[in-house]
Length: 124
Image (cartoon, rainbow, N blue to C red; front, side, top):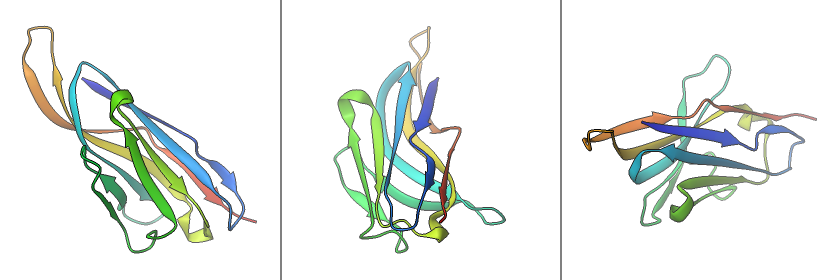
């Protein structure tokens, strides 16, 4: 099994910055694409940004130029640097990772894993 733990959310004023982190742990063989999603009250969960193991990135139009996704493969950790935050960025942010794990019988399994979410509130 693979566990994802997010940190770094909080309250910030419009125009401010926050940095989210998400660390993967468990019986990991490899972590492939890692991504951030968000869900605002009354809205569907949406993709924010993603990054492949090789470092290729993709961003939602609404955050392009303001958010930067990065990762540390040695630590199985993904980051989301959020600058010039807007009120409409307020949401619960979730980390997602595609990973291969191994169990006690040395059987491999591929899966998609989610973190518990971290609240980001942008308000004056």
